[in-house]
Length: 424
Image (cartoon, rainbow, N blue to C red; front, side, top):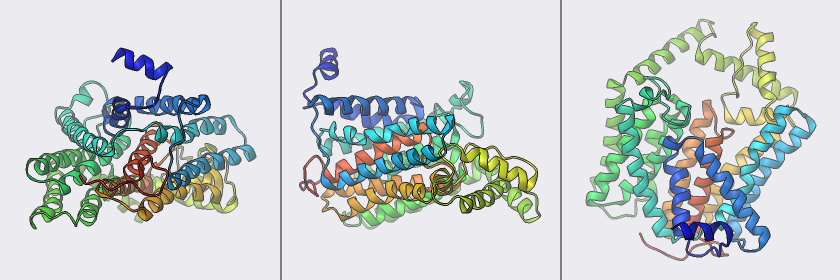
């Protein structure tokens, strides 16, 4: 193994590196809750390594034509922020541009993926189940609180943020629900139990924005895999029992009670004119953000500068500056960073992968990849409704890896629009 690693680093021939691909996608899509920001280091280093070998000629460009368009969408996201930063230069904007560089590594990461699609897909589902069991166990045992990760009510594990853990738990949920709907016998029950564990992982964080995902994903699974001929009761039971799990956890989880009570109190305060609570502050941010966007709709205020502008605007309006690190809505945040162009660029990295995968001729593996893509897009969209979608190192790294993984299942490495037919 040591010799393989040395050869891969210094004299790679980019053939038969299954272990590299399994390690990369397994770590970034399944183990982020336990490894934290290491996933961003892994994605950045892989992107740099692959891009360098484009230059040496050892690695060949392997993106099918539709995936090229996805790469261009990522490039567009980077370039739009770069243009906005050029018009509104600051040290913060320069740092934000540097943090966007990993998006340019998408092509290299895709091209360095050689593994058989079926093997990759099955391994990822198994690893997602194991990660879900482990994550739920750590939270139940309160290991994160013992080690100083977060607090009792909103666990973070190694992510440093309960909302980030909720997003990673949502991705595990996508893998497990997809596997449970398609499998039979023991495989069904194993992934069903894993889905319940990842569901608990999401709910335990208290991240309200992620709760719709818990019902959206099973419905997507039933729609995508309706052609799998299974006993009639198995498909509805997935949605039924998962919904029951939501109800049970809601009844007995202290985190859920705390978050529901806080939301109810905040909403009542907003109606009475008190905007000092969590939801009230968001109302102030949205109002200030909309006014700021209308003042500079084309190129916004430059990446990172929107925080100071929101603080100034809320201070003028309410007498108290609100200094969150983002606008608590991904699309509003993009519009403030780079105006209409920023909003279009963010929509591009969501819509283009979806459209390319939707238009492709898909075999069973490709259909599983399309489901995974749609599920992960739903997770990120829900996260971005009241929080971050992109703009966090873990969010960005996992999104790059997730889109690459999903599209690889759909298209493979062939220079054509669809992969060869494979059944799973």
